[in-house]
Amino acid sequence: MGRAGTRHSPRLKLAGVATLLLICGGISAFVYAAGNRRAATPDRNEIAVAITDKSCEPATLTVPAGRLSFVVTNRGARVLEWEILDGVMVLEERENIAPGQSRRLTTQLHPGEYSITCGLLSAPRGRLIVQASTAQPRVALTLMDMAGPAAEYRAVLSERSAAFGSALDAFEQAQAAGDAQAAREARGRAMALLPVLRPATAGDAELETLFARVQTALAGDTAAVPAEIRQAGEAFRTALSQRTVLPDTMLAGAITLLSPQDGETSAPEDVAAASAIARLLLPLTARIDPVLAARTGADLAGLPRDAKPGGATRALAEDLAAMRKALALPETERRS
Image 1 (cartoon, one colour):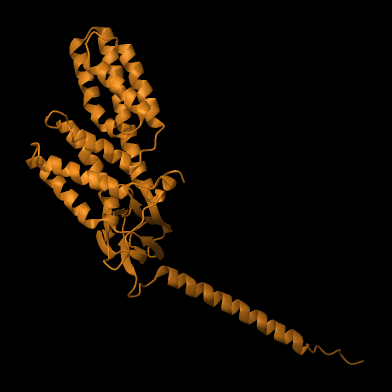
Image 2: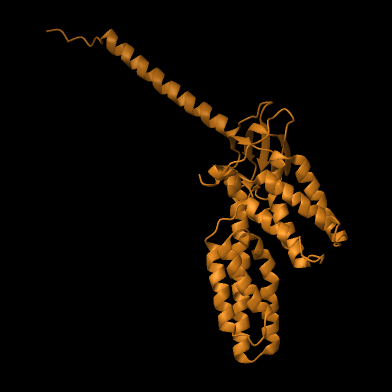
């Protein structure tokens, strides 16, 4: 009896060939993607950024406002990330970029100045300057645009409020120990910290009342009961921690600091607190009014040389009033 034949069906042969092609195609696509991931090359419409463990190349980028695409290449020795920061807020990021690899990041950026991370978190940050175009319409700010400055200001308030609380504790302890010198020093530290906290109280009846109570107690008779001063201070600090302060409120408070009554000159602590708010809000102002931002920057530069009434301090107050108007949100947006 003859041996049975081993003929294969043409249909099975075609299925085998198709499977082989799919496997090869998948491997080729994987190899291509991996190679492209390792060596992404920016085209003429993309912005190349290289990061190492300690720096960005370039460390300062100047780009036009609008939709932008970055190609970030890791030239360091460890896995790194690249972030665009607006104050303490991370706007965009690419994580887990391995050595030798490139990642693309596409985002919409408004005019202003941002920070970029350059390698390890301990490394100095780079600068990303986004310039406005005359052809672009005026930017309409939203509550989300305020999130970065509000978060950064809250961090400042939290730090200074903690220092204020520590000064009040030290004052109470020194008074209990009968150390008059230490008590005076602690009281002085507490009073010096108050101007930084005052702008957050603008237009808030409860905060303004609590602030006035603390200020009066600290400025009063040294025989005042320290425990009562500390209790007033804690009530103010607790209420303050529950607030989110938007830019127009910050600016209203800063203007008050720069507008003393009876023709007096603003105290250095008041000027420093108002200036810090102005610097915090310059990038946001530059998005909608670069001229106003530049003028305010010039006011700030003139402050060390001019502390007289009617000089740069008054000019700064006037420009902060313009900033307040420019950065104010409609009531419907504030409630959203």
